[in-house]
Length: 178
Image (cartoon, rainbow, N blue to C red; front, side, top):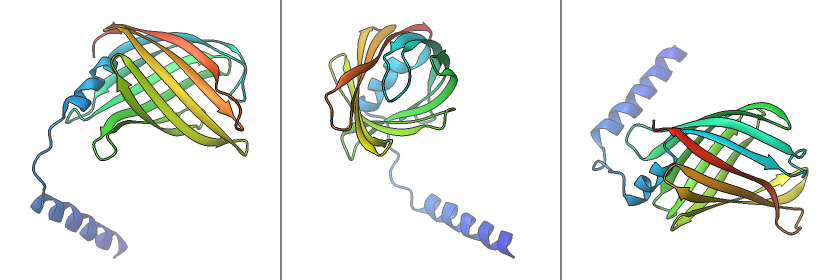
């Protein structure tokens, strides 16, 4: 009975949604701006010692593709660094209600994060706030499009109300289009 009820509710939700669909949305210029990130990338950089982890070099690859509808870019990454091997999954998009970019990410180390972003010219700025070890932490990631096939990035962080300091820097190079 429970399976039947769940199936009936799901069918009703999907059917009613199909009957009252809003006009088809199309990706705007803001969505299309995410195209820079689409493709296969090789990245490398260096972490500074911080509450996020030890100092050291890291390398990896990332593949980013348009999700159906071309409103979002979905990225899968894998790499290794001072804390060992790691994989990640992220979704980038544009939120027309907030008039800003969004980035949702998860990693094989158990992290999950939501970041808001903006772009001005060839510079993307992503910001986030969260608690780390019971203290507030603020993050700012700046991604500079150096060319259509390369970008450099810098992550700065403030821990417990302290000043923003660089905790990671690196570069990515496109190795193929997706």
